[in-house]
Length: 124
Image 1: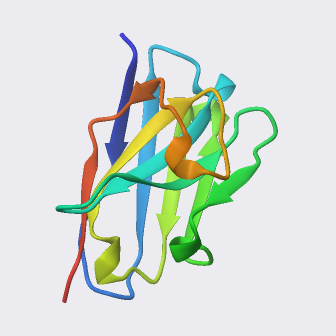
Image 2: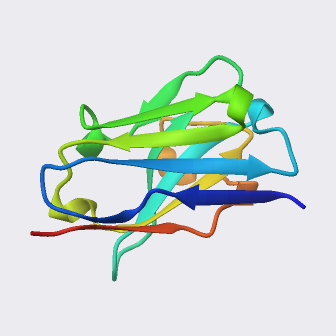
């Protein structure tokens, strides 16, 4: 059974860090790019970051550049999103997806497999 499972979300204070994980099963994530999206309450889903499967190129949304880092561990069939210096506006449900192609236009990326999402709340 093909599955992506996110974990690592939670409630944190502004300025703190979280690391999200995206674990794949039932398929080899190595061949795919990994993309993270987020959706805040009342807002459209937006692309946050993507790491390609072939050469590891990364693309990151401007508002999180310098704070968020995407990575992958092919041996573990898992992707990660390290989030530092979190702000209240980072609050939302974070989804990972496997994609055949990353793009600098993150909102145009099509996910082939999707996780169920993990809630991130940044609040004092």
